[in-house]
Image 1 (cartoon, rainbow, N blue to C red):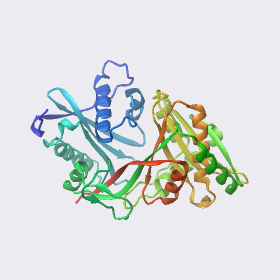
Image 2: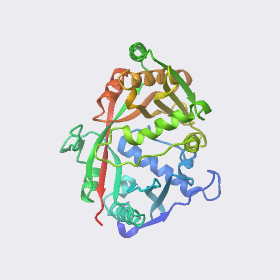
Image 3: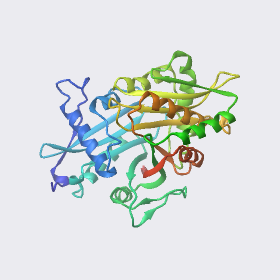
Image 4: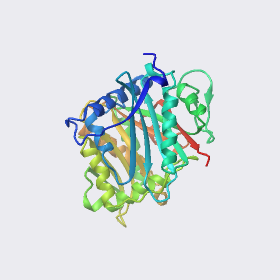
Length: 361
């Protein structure tokens, strides 16, 4: 394919109510092309999701507006464009992505798509654009963010961001843990963590969240928007309540995914103060995604991060013995969390760049 920007049509995605609805074909094909784009960049299928797993994320959401367009050339979907508009009060941010099959690169389609991104952000009064991209390690010129932690290659994606006025703000390490190897390292980490966390107990649940944990889980999820290392990236402070937790859980359950939450509870007060999430879709032999992990600031210093991660991994291995590895992302400057991951046996796979642009008035 030698498509150019003159050949492309950007068509708004029709989101079906169910995956077997008569109008679901475009959504199903969008997901297939999404998975191709991820595979072409990473060289593996760890980020592959099914259309059924993704569909809940595209239904109407009280917390954000999601705009998606299909990039179409000669009737063929070659990629997608997305702009997410958070609905937190006073928000200035928009989050965006452009994903194209490699055979659609180089003809200006990405730049045409980016004009649509900026136009949409301005229409919603947003001035801060933020986006993430995977940058597998290769030789050649490297870029370092202002944090001073980590580097990424000045590759195709990096050049695109720079050309369109974005600055590299942060690098996250993409790591994987081999669950087919002996788990003795996890046992050792857990033993040390338990000794340091004598004032805490571990509680676990699979979604949906039990009523007795909803309030504490909601508070911890709200702190993810303020307490996780963010460099110069901008995130709205999120308000979480029982309805938002229920919505969060439904995104997994409605897509046929399993979510295990492992939390540390302060014995004296009953407060939930640290948590870790592990998720897997309908294929039990696929890679597991380790999602949010957080220790509330006032409870740090008791190895609670190691406690919830290690307990979660051992429980997950018993529940889902066929999953071969766990994949996670952590900011390169988040040395405490990286120390835990390395002790557990996680190894670097690739690096993700976080990019930001502030629009002029």
